Image (cartoon, rainbow, N blue to C red; front, side, top):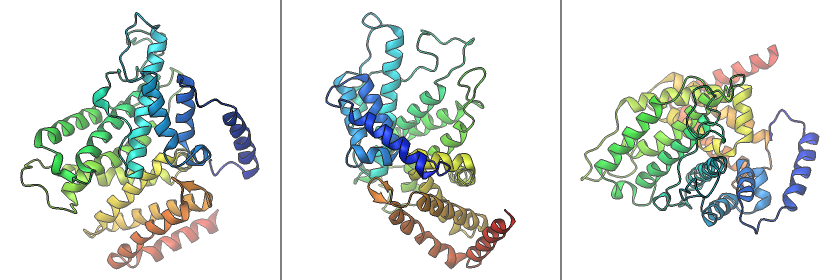
Length: 355
């Protein structure tokens, strides 16, 4: 779905892909079917053919439980390579379920308290133990699974109709500890092999971390309801600066060709990106002119994304409808810094005349 691909080539590929999907038997529960459903859920244009919003993710979760991907299977009953593949697919199910739930504002399909399956293994499937002579080719996938688990916990504590009413200080403090451990454990490089890296991994994870941290922190930093009196926990104030710096970096990244590509291809990234815009909009209220400029850049990126995919749905909602909601943020920007839109418009015009 990249905007760099011509419509003729894209339509030809979609036609071939749809023919292959139509020939698949989705009634039989299998590991390959779960993987195909997860593949369909990566992009909403593909998932739209399968059914209503989130249907592919829901069916993948249901089918994964049916074939016991959520259980820890003894090596006595299956080869180690098969066990690693099962864990990796289960991690993918968990990632898709958590992010799909947050995007739609719905309950997750999975209750992880009933699961004891291990997290994905970082090394190739045939390896039984970590081997420093090999590249941890699935390290990014493992990190994504851990972040999805943190997102699910944050969403459960702060995103339900009860808000913070069902949380307690210990759960919140443990979440903070686990999140900080996740951040500290992030490597500087993401090798897929000794000859190949995934250069955009850090940018993607930083973008996703904005949504996770925003989900957890929003009821404290920008509450819409009183914080329950029984809660003494408060997030570290430094997290506000972390959100601002991460969201700034994410918006700058999405303006690059690589960022545009992933925003086009991976539909779940639009929710974290919108969280970045909200963070910048809230920074704008403090009178930060950099936040005003960054917000305008982010809105422009959404406009380009909507223009590229005009008529394509996002969770069955037209992209134009999403854009119209995002443009509401311009009203607040104009109230605080009325000169920013004109300045940015001139900047884009000058850039266009020089290319």
